[in-house]
Image (cartoon, rainbow, N blue to C red; front, side, top):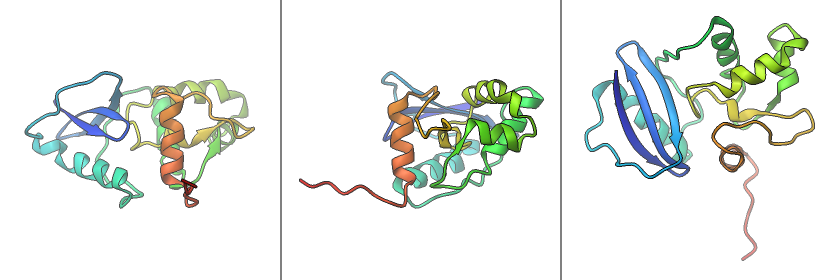
Length: 157
């Protein structure tokens, strides 16, 4: 496994992967040393994340290799179908996965998503439109949703 640390607008980000794909992208809540030389197998991921944060990429095209249960992987695959700039609710996601009663299991799998930003769990909100349940912190979820919004808020001052 190779790994690197990059700086994003939302904090230091750790990327882990190998020839089989990217296995995790996590935001770190502390200051870390940025990796000087990015391993070859992680270069494309770093490039695509930087493009996303610069606003020039809306979709990732990376080989992914997250570790999880079959159910979790099924949820993570469904998350990738949520379009850039759109949101869905945990209830809607449960329905799409075929079981309304699985809402807690879906929310739990969503919270265990190891591929921050790339698998867009930040696009899942409460049925009432509230920002709930985000492992990276609600301030990051709000930032990501605003970053993806087609309606950019203009400042008055």
